[in-house]
Every structure is written in C-alpha cells, then in structure tokens.
Image (tube, rainbow, N blue to C red; front, side, top):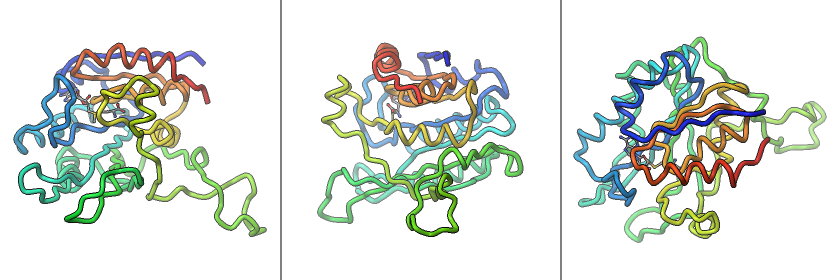
Length: 257
Ligand SMILES: C[S@@+](CC[C@H](N)C(=O)[O-])C[C@H]1O[C@@H](n2cnc3c(N)ncnc32)[C@H](O)[C@@H]1O
C-alpha cells in the first residue's frame, strides 16, 4: 500500500502550529536528553528550565495535532548531570510536564537493553522509559491483538494457539549499535530508535493510512516504521542534514510488513 512521508526542517515549536488539528493518530519521539550529545545544529546542553520549556511546548502543541483518541509515546531516560553526575529522572520530569499539558498516563513502558557503557561508580543503566500518554482515558486505540507475543508455557491446552500474550510494560529491544549504524552509513547519528520497537508502538496505536508524527525526527526511524506498516508520516527535524538521511532510509531500508 502506498504511503506519504513529509519531512519538515525547522524547530518543532513552530512547525507544530502548521500541522492540521486532530489529524494525527500517533506521535512517537525521543527528544534530545540535554546531556551534550553531538547532534550537529542543535546544541544538546541548555539550561534545565529551557529544556523543560521545549518539552512542555512540544507536548502542548502536539495535543492539538492529535486526534481525540490519539496517543503520544515519549521516550526519555534517567541521565547523569554533566557536572555532578547525579542522575536526573527525565521520565518523572516529563510526566509532570505531560500532566500540566493535559495528558493521561496509560502506561509507563520500560525499554530494557543490554548494549551500553559500564560506569564504575554506579550500577550500569540498562533501561529507558516510554511514557504512553493519551488525550482521553476512555477513548484511545489499543490493538492488543496486533502486538501479542508467544506464550511462555506453550503446552498449556487452555491457551489459544493463534493468540499469544500481552507483551507487558517491560520491553526488550537491542539498541542500534555502532556496527549496524556504520553498515547503514549512519555512524554520525548519535541516538537511533530500534525499528521493531517503533513498529510495535505504531501497530498498537493506529491503523493503516493513519498519520504518525515525530517532532524530533533525527534519522527518521519513525517515518521508516510508519512506511513499513502502510501509515503516512510527518517528520520534524531542526537540522537539515537529516533530510537526505531520512529520504535515503525510506528508500533503502523499506521492508513492507
Ligand atoms: C534523540 S534525537 C532523535 C533520534 C531519532 N529517534 C532516530 O531514530 O534517529 C533528537 C533529534 O531532535 C533534533 N532536535 C532538537 N531540538 C529540536 C527542535 N526544537 N525541533 C526539531 N528538532 C529538534 C536533534 O537535531 C536530533 O536530531
């Protein structure tokens, strides 16, 4: 099924004003974590209040763009403060911002992975959060049957062999490692979503031909997952170097499901 994929280069705070109201089924995004990563144009080290203002504005404006039964999946993680190394719980901070913007928390999903650094003065961090936020707690899309996973006890006769179980709120997906990035010609991209994780999110929260939005698009993993699943997408990204990267990924990595 053919789908459309729009790329908007600009600040999402401005670009979100131009998205049609009540038109988006799912927003999924990973904002910069304010830890000094090298994104190119965007400087990932701003005053904490400025970071909160950015996330709040994006949450608020995204709410207008979302359909009444739409969902916003916000991926953030605990991050060490660059000076003191104290851990800053970006998920708790983001939850408070989301409540202020008028969302309800449907699930706080733990994204668990193995491949990451091993600090010596604290436990190694092996999870990030995906806050599943909805506009309306009584009316939102949840296609559980599209994301069921194999049962643990396969021999239990009471289980429906074609069904599978609820994937729960703890998800394991490998992070995209440097070897894979190099193979894709994307070694410059600092943080990339694993495609299968975004496909799960899109499958559970939208239907074919729906519109999916990522206001911090980076290399365009959300657009790619949307295309694989016959959804339309809008990618907003401040750095114009990503325009060609997103276009190339949509062409080279497309795997219709
Ligand atoms: C964590 S990365 C997203 C990576 C993406 N999930 C992927 O799979 O490639 C965050 C992106 O947000 C962009 N960005 C930062 N501030 C922005 C803003 N105000 N508006 C739009 N994009 C912004 C950065 O340039 C960076 O590419």
